[in-house]
Amino acid sequence: MTNKTSNKNTIAKSAAAVSIAVMCSRVLGLVREQIFAGLFGAGMTYDAFIVAFRIPNLLRDLFGEGALSAAFVTVFTAYDTTRTKEETFRLASNVLTFILILLSLITLLAMYFAEPLVHLLAPDFSLVTGKVELTQKLTRIMLPFLVFISLSAVVMGMLNTKGKFFVPAIASSFFNLGSIIGGVSFAYILPKYGQPAIAGMAIGTLLGGLMQLGIQIPTLLKTGFRYKPILDLRDPGLHRILKLMIPATIGLSATQINIFVNTGFASTCGDGAVSWLYYAFRLVQLPIGVFGVALSIAMLPILAKQAARKDIAQMKKTMISSLTLVFALTLPATAWLMLLSEPIIRVIFERGAFTSFDTIATAQTLTFFSIGLFAYSANKILVPAFYALDKTKYPVIASFIAVGLNIVIIYFTIDRFQHLAIAFSTSCTMLINFIFLMVVLYRSMGGFSVSTLLKALVKIAISCLGLILTVLLIQPLVAITLSGNILQQVFGLASLFLASSISYGALLYFLKLEEMNILLTKIGNKLKRQKTA
Image (cartoon, rainbow, N blue to C red):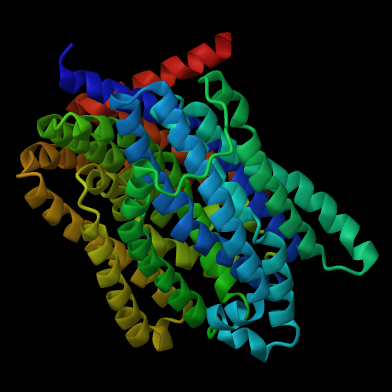
């Protein structure tokens, strides 16, 4: 077996395991959002929760899961490849201690400044009586989530480097379980003591973060790791991780500036706008997580090992293969979300406090978000390549270009399109970001096989055309079921997804897209093993 085929199989196998786990998590995530929609709808209460949760999420991306995870995996993989087991695990213990202390201090500081943070993120909340106070309360409850999820990211990086992908990926399912079970329980208990029900969901979020960390510990212990309370600020491995994190954190700060900007603009569009954007983006996150993030997680350890060996030729093949897979998986998802946005939103969310008006508004938002879906997912593949090449400044530059363009696009379109301008701008900036990263990476790697990628894209485009035609032909036949009761709606959507999936898969098989065939084989084998276990 050639190295090229071996790498394709390794990535596909790892991505298949991660995709199954992430799919479980995202489905549970949708259940979580359904509960929110049914209990709180799209208005003041849920707007407050979204903004409150955005603050620890913002800090998590800046200091934890985003920058830390990629930097840690790069250095930990290098240690695992070239150093002793003791040196490698000592580095991990030192990083865990450092992160625990640093993020605990940041959490306490953010709790103290919760009120000005809320005013900064959503200035127009002060126009609605009690909205700032509620957001502030929820923020303080959820801030410790930052510590749990960041430690979880370090543990996930260790397990991925050791070839353990499924457990870290399924761990986020336990976050959703904790959020659902704990959140709903507290949501019914707290009002009896004069506290808002939404505070119960905030406590559930905190419990979910703790469960996401805890479920990975047994698997980590099986690798031989034993935590030792070490804090060595002179450790060169820690210095290298921090050095890699600095440009990544600066780049992610640009993303967070975008979130600040988008939330600020959305808060001017009236009650519900923040919620519609959030619900729609959560649906877009399903294919991004299942495909883009899964492939990124599977690819990074392989790229890091190839970089440690200075094997640029194999790095190019790994990247092209991964991009081909992400396009093959996200382009049909884009077509589905754009063609079927309204029936999808209706079947998932329209019940309880979530009205038909909310369905239409969220579906329109989803359509605009979907435009940039493939680019958003592809960027998840491109950024790790820059990490492996130790060229982290370029994603930073791309992020700040995106910030500037985002502000300009929203500024000139929000008066006319309201919250839809934010979704449209997000897609535009992701597309521009993708083009910039592709061009720079091509030059940084001394070129790669663009013709191979283009040939694959042609096959995927033809297959997507078959998918679209199938949906358009069958949709009139199931139109009655799509507007019926919940079971009829599910049946109608399932019919459309099944028929168009068969059409898409058959065309890809006929056109012989190698990466897709490998991935489907690995997923099938994984499911068979789980069924017989």
